[in-house]
Length: 415
Image 1 (cartoon, rainbow, N blue to C red):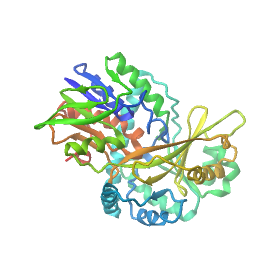
Image 2: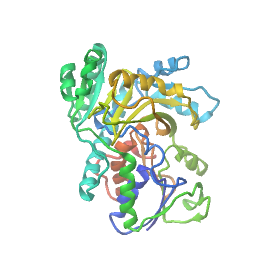
Image 3: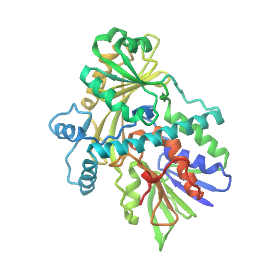
Image 4: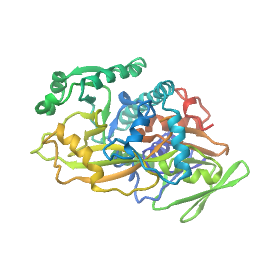
């Protein structure tokens, strides 16, 4: 079968990899970038974080969004705009901000993340991949005692699903991560997930792409996807900036740009670009970086060692497809990490990034066939695309092959 995959991020490339396993398909990957994994896959938090797979839509978020209208230091920010899709998506998101839906969505999200991590580890073992992987777990640090107590209670949702989580007091945190020793009095404790890990998503994706090339996958890079052309119940071809390309099956994995291609074809999926901010800091032998990736839960800032660098990520900004940013947008996250790691990295030479997270109101992706019999979607993994990638790809491959996925795929169906 001739399969065209639209999108060369970690989702599209892992999907291509899984589809090559049968050896029965002729696969083409199309992307407007000059290389694979150049957008969100390149500048994410670098965490494989099944132990933090909570739904964003929760009862506390509406108040944070409201506050962000007049304050710039909130991790969730809303930028009011005259955009029907923005208001439509926001209404669907706010509808999920209740306790029952938050628990339901968290369970579905965690199930996919856990499955995906198992698939990742299998792929790594089979191919002996190197991608700056760290398997020392992740810390979810709480600064205030009351927040720590709430965090412990909240974590029971995942523990009840079999997730291995430990509660550490401040002294135990320092024993695990000595870099926090000088600031021992600035936090109450942490929830530690020993099975979580981290790694360079871009490097992993490019290593997988090399395997795909060996398996005869065709890469059409620097080629923009323009539109899908429909004919009855099928997609006849995809129009790009260079050609019209036909296929037996089309897979849309364009991240936050997926709805821009799908909607003109009559498929209106609630995937919205939520802008994320990240910075990469150089680490030298004079610095004292952490060995374990950490999330500062009070400020919602994540920082992770990635090779000879420290990746810092934060902020979810609801601002449409606006990539603009100011230096002040990065200051709260840099202050937060420098407060915990005074000598963690070269804070005077940050490299700034923004990216679009393809968010759905529930926080779970769409994986499945559409109303067109030869159009498939694997998109909407949001801020956990790196964590969800390998599991999403395997589910997609199973469904395309007419097989039943190893986990329940009903929370991810397009219908």
